[in-house]
Length: 236
Image (spheres, rainbow, N blue to C red):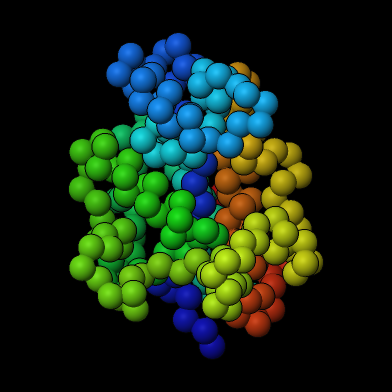
């Protein structure tokens, strides 16, 4: 039997730190202008028009939702339970996540798993904690660690099988492994608009939790274990 007791799946959703470019402090406007000059811009948009992309950069964005899931062997078989930590106050959200991974799990054994997590989710959370003067949990501290000492799993890396030039989205993996999509309502490119213009954080949180469900299923399939039936996935 596989031991999943110390494995936590996660996904984050982010938004720009401010609703619009005009709301940025002047100093940050100038820095965004410099950043925007290096972004792919085939339509020749202004830095203000490109500001919707700020969400993906931890220096210009913020975390608005973290969904987590864990596998547990229950009487009826393996089950996946998923919850979210979402909110407009990033400090409270990040502190709640920190409390979860430090008090509900054994920090010395905890392994975090995300898709493209090494490039996005894990460093984004850590950087936003530093920005918000929150002590970074040991699980997210990489300095001085050897590669095999880092407690992170990345399903993108797992799927590459050593092919480091290859990128495959979670949605594509779900499609080829016959796993139901999480993109049946919105996708990541729409999150900033839904957050600021539709004021629908709950919709974003639901999407984030669906991504974790797909992530866990992809992880199982890559490990050549059976995917879960939908009735064994409990989204809280």
